Amino acid sequence: GQQVMQIPQYQHVQEGEDFTTYCNSSTTLSNIQWYKQRPGGHPVFLIQLVKSGEVKKQKRLTFQFGEAKKNSSLHITATQTTDVGTYFCAVFSGSARQLTFGSGTQLTVLP
Amino acid sequence: GAVVSQHPSWVICKSGTSVKIECRSLDFQATTMFWYRQFPKQSLMLMATSNEGSKATYEQGVEKDKFLINHASLTLSTLTVTSAHPEDSSFYICSARTSGGVDTQYFGPGTRLTVL
Image 1 (spheres, rainbow over the protein chains, first blue to last red):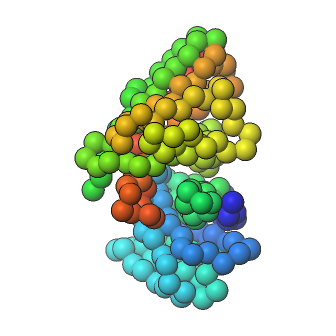
Image 2 (image 1 turned 180 degrees about the horizontal axis):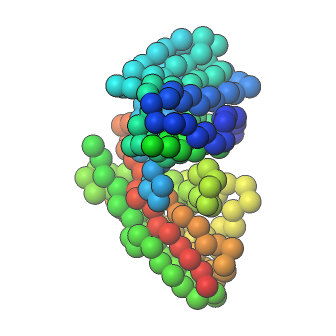
């Protein structure tokens, strides 16, 4: 199925600093989704990007889909301790449209 | 939004026993449900896709005789880990998809399995 590489694996930031995680694919994606998983919790859907070059914002979170639809990023401005968790990108593959998750970026926000 | 529940939320069992995990869509009918496994500090790995009334489709490397999946109704899928061993200890998460929403999956809260 579709494979996505996600970097970095870990990121420690001071509260108030910005954070970015990236997902890259070798093939063109039809769409990409982003999820957040708090420690001990389950993935929670954040957003889906479909269009080439698409940019969507949710408060301090900015999501981008590359022009070639092969990469995507999630940027958090002025992180807060509530942003702590692991952020995953996910893409669809297979006849049953299964979700394949990236390896995730674990964000730690130091107060 | 749509709600998916899982039961139990956690379970501890002895090696060699079988454990059944239930996944229910509470306010919608799920034609397709997915089962994932997540080891500590790792990503979610798809184990199998189950469609109501038919056999599950397992991902490569997942033993279908060890991880029995039943999707008998549009609101319930079960995963049975047979003859569990310590290496099966993991976080098992299901997700459900409605027939009308191709690209929308709703995740359950997960079941943490510990095999002693």
